Image 1 (spheres, rainbow, N blue to C red):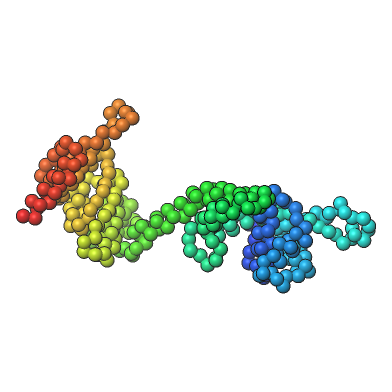
Image 2: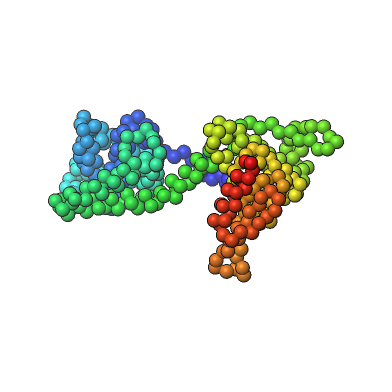
Length: 341
């Protein structure tokens, strides 16, 4: 992180989101933003006031309050002002200082962010419909358009188009949000508190601390990570039904682990009754600690544009090459039935 003046300065532009009379400030800023998107950048106090009192919520709203609110937003740098001298016919009129107002660049981005937060695909405290719901409602109005004038149709179409643009722009943000939730949910390190111990031949048992872990070989380090992973998963599955599958998936399984420890890892997975999917560049899985295993070898000869699948079945004693994937299922059923006899 590099500390700069921009980073440490207070953002007065966001005060309107939490200040007293927040409902008035936010509605005023939303009026400015909606007009900004329609390329109408400058508004008079009268324009704002007329829009505000259209809603019954602001039936008691007064012009003096509107003037005070605009002055506050100018002070917080949400609005820029310019004195309108086009219609000034006297010194007295000039002294009355009739202003036009425009959103600042910061405020435009703040309102964009607020809209994105309002339209997240999660349940929140806001009663405003989500972005998808609003799009659905606007599409349902399509038959009405033939009875409206051109200006109303244009406004409807522009708003709908903006919603679709916003939906497209926010898609990746929604997916990042979803993946982050899934990542946090599936992080087994957050399920339990672990206290690990290790013991080598001829040595006493000791707690697996960072310093002990640091002197392990690559294979020993891998083993010390797989064991708590398997423990956490089996503890989670114990809360499920007896017939629930115990799925586990490993990428580049047991990389850096020697054959003896790989054998023990497969034995552990069998004892835990895991149904597992693993991939590896070198590992076949034909260990005597596994009673059955479906193996698929992927072959891409000479960087061809296709991949050939070679199906095998390990029955606990030998690896058998089969003609096609259907044979894998058939032979698997035979092995399972034989094991029950």
